[in-house]
Amino acid sequence: MKRYLIHFAQNLSLVALAGVFAIYIARLTYPFFYCTYVGPLLDPYVCQGLSFDFGYEIMSWMMLLYCFFAPLFLVALGSSARYWWVAVSFSPILLLMVVGLINGADPTIVISAGIVAIVGLGIAWLVRKALSVLAPGLMTKIS
Image (cartoon, rainbow, N blue to C red; front, side, top):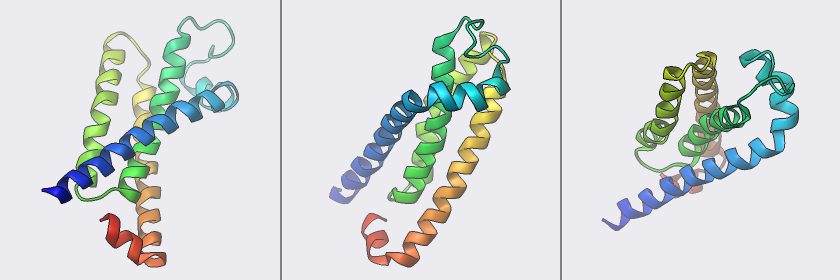
């Protein structure tokens, strides 16, 4: 029972860490990276004063970053049932996306989030394989 509680706390802390990273990185990179590269793909009037939903823009950027960091942290450093935790951690994001689509949001954010999540899973898988070769003692402790 103690082992399951430790794994639960470890995975829950990784989900919280992914959320904190997403918020922190979004605040740092929103004015430059999102407004220059990502935003114009989703909305041609983004960050030009012609878009009326600033809150949706920063939230979509945070969701994309969370879709990258959550699988990255959980698969690379998570303990048992890490893929189940990835699915559970994506459930609020999926709910927000469905509500956004019902309210008339652009569907490219859903496609972008899926691509970012797959990239995050791929990088996390490579990190986990590299860590199992470079630091097998660490990986046996956290698995």
